Image (cartoon, rainbow over all chains, first blue to last red; front, side, top):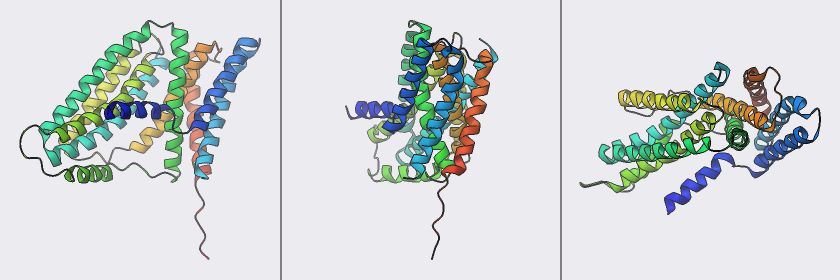
Length: 68
Length: 247
């Protein structure tokens, strides 16, 4: 049972070790999904925007952790 | 399926597997040298068998789900996983987090095993359980990476799985020769590179799943890898903490 709990914790920890960081990524992805689904120009601009947003989240997340 | 898909997938699976297997090897070596090799090798072998079963179950199961949905689900998980690795790698490179040291990890594990007392004959449950757990825990990450990068397109699963097996063979072979923790493997640099590759892959597949029209089609994977690498490298000096000035 202990091993199963440890495996579960490890599995969740693979993806989320900082809730705010993971939430920012998911929110940005949802934003891109809305953009692609509901705008005419969405599919064309969403690729570069996806990269720019994720790059920003990465840098901001690293800076926030570094300044703690 | 083109080389722009296969090459980054195989590279990511191979390098990520090297990192995880090196970490597992350190603990298995500590178990072997402190408690004996029977428990260490049986535990590691059993862990690998469980991992093979997981691959056999989850690999084909993903093929039953529509590819668009798989790309969004697996892409999201891959992105969360890759960006977590990449942020840690940036912080390690900037000196904010301590670098992973296999020699120190080996010493710590050996001390913990010695604290259990001397093993005297019979089946060594402590040694078996320790080797089994570490193989399973580190291997689950390998399985996830293989299944995730392999699920992105038809024909990717086999090359990704073979890359992981090749990494296992390389690490075990070097471990058998060196008979000590592989502290010379540039783990932290590998983690940096794997973080970049997985983040780029995750981004591309989510985009594909959402219906994004990528500029340059498949070549945008290369662009994403280059883009995330440059951003991550640029972030390292920004994260370096200024040294305290002594009065």
